[in-house]
Length: 451
Image 1 (cartoon, one colour):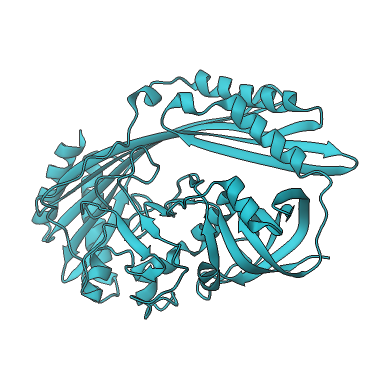
Image 2 (cartoon, helix red, strand yellow; image 1 turned 120 degrees about the vertical axis):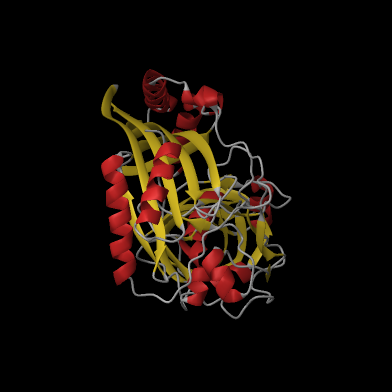
């Protein structure tokens, strides 16, 4: 049966069992991933998963259940499961079912031409990346990753209060890792690109960029320990922001897991820093017309010219805070409860190019990769100590590659120490934690442990 017929039968069965307000959240996710190695398809996976999450009120509580089948048996399973869960759940949180927003935005999230591509297109692109990286320079000895992938998602939400909405989104991406060798040193250059227009993937260009970066890191050395002015290149800055993005969640604040709880209205960053969550960016990986509770989304400024002006809210946290939801309710999957996550979450670009930022640095380090983010960063305190590598800059020019260093500091202090912001805003691969982006950031001072 189709989803709408299933919904009607499920709600009727729930009412007959004594359930109150009910909601279904259905997701159909398709994924294709191709990896090639030494001119052969090394790994190929294709999945098409459909699932339904069910929430229902009973006895003042809300119970949960989920299924991957849309049939009569699943209706009984969901009703009985939600009923049993509501009777044992131990929380005083009031969970609200949303009747719908007055209007919903229109945002471009799905490319039909992209959806029509064949698996052979992805295989050909991966093979082209491998060939191009190997041909870029004789020092490229191996392409250990040449991967292309496609992801699509269809979301349907409906409840007994009259809400019924759906949307779909898709994207493709390529990732290539090129290994360069010279004089006993081995370095790897990695590049990826997310697109909704297949013509923008440009496999050959992507591969050449990865090869060039690997080669540029050859003959690297450490630097003396000390405090350095640093550029966090857009990819490193993005990874650091993604690690600490949770501190801007109202849920983390209300659970005491964020040091920003009493900082609303305070200056917590350099005046150059504006941090935005924008679910309405056309063709961006985190864009959508409504959140996981059916609330119409809107852009939210979290930091404005250095001032903390908002947290990210869902209905539950907004009610606790006496605020309005920002439309950031999130479910990691149809199996998951409602939490909070950003959509397209990024530091707004500045007005100078990356090259101009390097010239402004004059003397210091460029960090292009951070290692150990899961173990070397504390999302609550903001402290981090991370392996890193990149380039030494002297007189406004890159003087050579740098490795075997550790940078340490505090995320909140780092925000205060931003001197300048580049115009090179770049997003990563969307994940359950949102679609995170950043331009390159010039930081006044970071502690570096080297030789």
